[in-house]
Length: 498
Image (cartoon, rainbow, N blue to C red; front, side):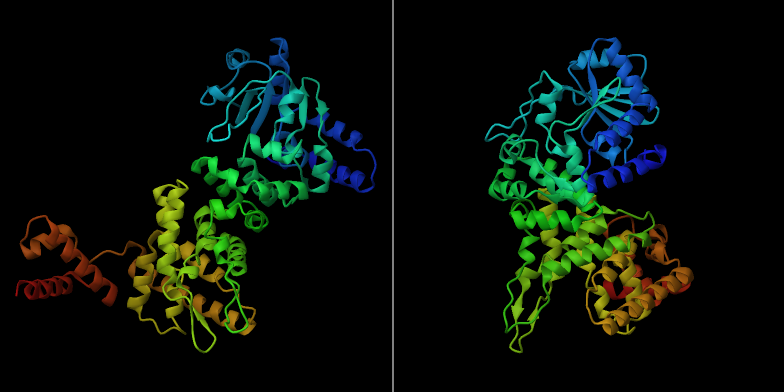
């Protein structure tokens, strides 16, 4: 669901911003928007079904915020005094599907006409000082439910049916100002759920909002509180932040408040000390620029963007530099093998954050390969070296293209243009070899059965050794006919038997 589905939202938002900038009342605009929103069939039907059963219900939180921004999505959030069993009763016979995996938190999910609904009993959650999970308590009022939410822009509601707009904490004005505040004292909010500190950075990155000074101060003062939150919840917020339109905004906030030291310490570690005697670029700022440039290049990827693996590789590609930094006598600084060291650090951090094995392997592989291109020079690689580049990148080749191009942050236009032309040449050679040699299906010229028949050996480790020999032959010479492959294989076998 997007703004095009409710074309009235965009002009209303523009009108609303004009009204706000002129310092006049927002009530006419907000009421018009809410009245139009409640006419959406599913929202209207939800209100009618719960009203008929004697329960209040309201569209709430991010759904109201996103509707006012003209970006309402397919998932809609509601809150009600009804308990989970009663919520299911109100939905019976109407929804296409229903699930209750969030029942212990008071949430019942449903799908209706392509939309996903989450309907939650009024709640008042809190963390005990040493707990990693919130203690769920049901509330008794809409206002109380809104008060316990993370930020004022998420504490607006639309009471159903009828569409009465409820905004007890000034969320609408914050939305107009592009500001993120908590409904009450930020210290109380972050004590209730420390993950909200990461959420502040994530929402700032998604909406390009400014986080209120008192919220930033609380994040800085309570950063160590994030350590009680499970790795999975931290990971999920970091993923949303990295995939946001403006990840630099959120990542910078995490570093400035000390939260990054606890959830992604490799990032602030890139702020290497510099002095007048040693010359090297600011690795931290370089990293954020590479991330932004990789985002700008995502259209090159087969599926476009946002692409989590590419963005994480860009963010983490230089994490091996602090451990490998060495000072040379001429004033320069070296980071030899930071690609290999960085790949190991990436695996360690991503595993600690409970990323999937495939994600860990993909990001680590890109980090390990991100310097490979610089051995290409001005095109000195043989076709064999190009084949190995493609083989080693495997399914991550297109992402490696993006990362390598994004890694050029020099302000020297001549140097940048030279690097771009050189990589264009490498890609062109890859494309030519791909057409000529079916490069993507890089296999030896004999299969396992042919190897066993040629050498007269049974299945086993020797077949694997022979296979790898033929693959190296394929790298060096390109495709050869079966006779040449058998001749080479028999020669290799003869030397092995000596």
